[in-house]
Amino acid sequence: MRITRVEPFILHIPVTGGSIADSTHRISHWGVVGTKIVTEDGREGYGFTGTHADLASDRLITACIRDCYAPLLVGEDASETSRLWTKLARHPALQWVGRAGITQLALAGVDVALWDLNAKAAGVPLWHLLGGAQRDKVEAYNTDIGWLSLSKEALLDGCRAAIEGEGFRRVKVKVGHADLNVDIDRLEAVRRTVGSRVTVAIDGNGRWDLPTCLRFCARAAPLDIFWFEEPLWYDDVASHAALARASSIPIALGEQLYTLDAFNAFITAGAVHYVQPDVTRLGGITEVLQVATVALAHRLPVAPHAGDMSQVHVHLAYWLQNTPALEYIPWIKDAFEEPADVVDGFFKKPQRPGAGTTPKPETFLRYAKPLA
Ligand SMILES: [Mg+2]
Image (cartoon, rainbow, N blue to C red):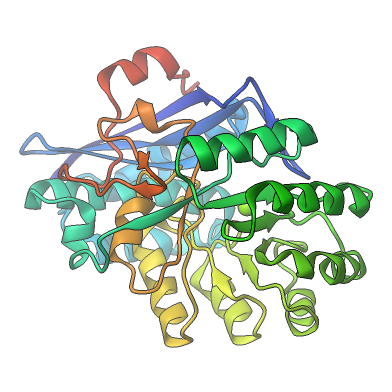
């Protein structure tokens, strides 16, 4: 499978309801920024990272793919995913400017495209190529009902619609107001609305400091919170470890960790309970497999974060030994040949060969942005 062409792309796809916000971000579109890789036998693999659809920074990612990675890939054998990952991630010049951020997001797109090519060449879905499904069903949790920008009434309506209308048994609610009393009030109302049998996770998106988190967790713990995601600044291992020691609420994180080493630091410090690697933030599927192995060695559950809106992670979740649930946000799924769909609270098991990353032809006509 000799690589002949590497063609980056940028897609901006609208989010639900015009715009959404958490405690630190407000967005109107999700950026699907990545690459098509073509081989001499005519196969096409697709991979992408997820962004906040900021065109200027999206172009830094596609420039990295076009100018730095493509010359290292053309002529190579696409089946050698591990060696090519190392060639790109540990290239002496690129390592100097890389290991996180732009180069890593670009690497994610390339690596996922290579895995997509390999699964297509084998004629199987990615979960099968990885070694087969470990479970019959993958349960979904709904994040799209829980944005901080929703009024309390809209939040409760969304919970009811997801649970009674669509069969979800798990939801995630954003927190992180300047006044934590607002969040406690919203969470108490959510718990009253969903009852005791629906799991409620929360997500702070790194807004609060340790004293605020300690006060908040003492009041939120009686509400049976499934996990508290990104309670503190993303890189702060010591404060997460302190919160983990002080609170009964499990901590989840990983969506802003870019390396195996970063995950290892949190895991060995006892600073995380639910490990959340993301193929779009780490260096693709190759590095998520490494993180999953470390988590397994510590007997920690892995709940991938959905920077890909679960197009790829649904394959990983079927394959992982130790995953409780997978994130569901429906923004981009219908742009792909095989959408990551949920029926009665469970993700459909992908059937098509590949990694779930092949866009429909009309997707490029509707959402593509110019690379320069
Ligand atoms: Mg999050």
